[in-house]
Image (tube, rainbow, N blue to C red; front, side, top):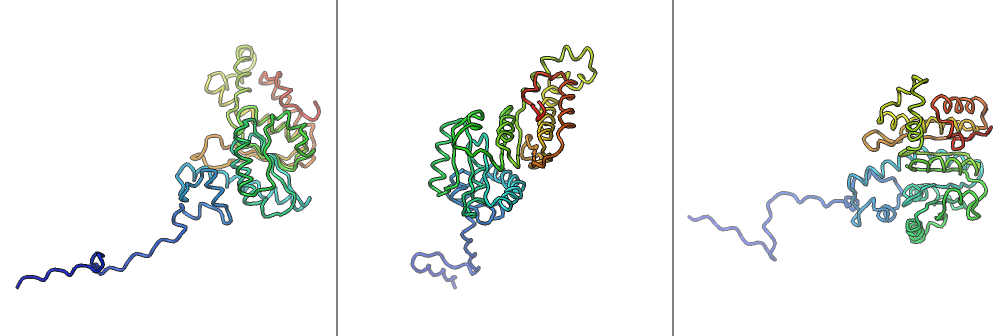
Length: 307
């Protein structure tokens, strides 16, 4: 007897296979792993910053960028809480803000819940980025954020900023931009300074220029005789001088990694907290380092409280 042919499915639907249907994915599966995003984080903000796509997905590069900002937030959050507890409000300036990733994340995760007159100021010299950040802050109703198209020199004297600032940050501020942020922080009597320096070239250029004279009488010049060593040693010395400068202004300084090496080669994190510490010894050490390495012409940049 010939085998019976299977009955056609009703309403045009395929025949059932007998296997249970897979459960539908939860709504959050449109995003990447939910553990990548902190609780309470604005999804609209992450999309606007292009960390998430329009449908809520995240690529590897965006995940790396978000992880880096979150890691930095872990260092900054206790500083914000310290200021809030002692003063009742917090003011923060982010120098070289760029697209203001850091400022927006800080506001979203910390400032927007305060409901007081705490404020974040983003300082950026590129007018188009300032305009974009202003539009985004207005759209998200982040009323405690301002974005100013100013140089560092102008920001020190600008009436748009208060006379003192509690926290100053500079994330991946290239070359002398980090030193400019330090100058601003000292002028504004910042309680906390958070820096991630990047692409330091000025000290290396001076080392290179004076290398011939130094080789004759200073055997330490061998440390930076070869060009690649000049570049790397110059970067290292730059951050050492910055730490000594901050200590010479009464700050307690700690240096650590921002993230693991797999995320960024420029990951040195400098955190300075004003403690009114003795200034003489670090000022003397800074001057000795400048003398030893032939960097005397850089005294004005790495100025101390005794200068």
